[in-house]
Length: 222
Image (cartoon, rainbow, N blue to C red; front, side, top):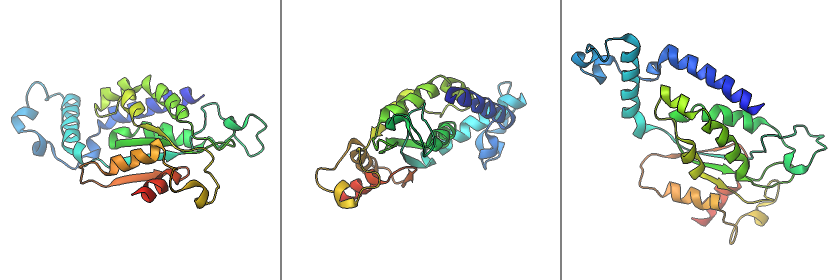
């Protein structure tokens, strides 16, 4: 089902890209980006080709201004069993909302510099499992080349895998004195510190879809 949703949304994004060629995301006029003689050359005189050239050039100009983003999510398995009365195995019982959000987010990753995808404690089992995120990235891997036909700045699936991290289990709903402090670091909290310490003047925007434990531990450590 998730795969079907991915392809439907890909079709919608493709239609939108074909109609707008992403030019609407730029505040530049043609002549501010490329000289008139280039704009009128055989390579760009076709309207669609010209639009795409402008869009790609403006995208390159804006790459270093993209928001740096970390997503923390209590991401469940793709075959999640929804509902508070779930009678399935606890690791599969949860809410599918973050799956839906991640499908949308992945189709807009060209607008961000994705610094990290973090799996926080999730499901009725209260476990953090980054394999769940890697599974949806595998689906993204089936369509990302198509996306890059419209905007080459969509990240590769391998890049997204390389910035996927796991938090600690058994942290949801627990008091802070049990889940924060000495000996409570995780690969996710350590990654947050490394990212913030990069020599980059842009702020790091952290979106908390699930538990904020990994963010809190990173702050505690520094």
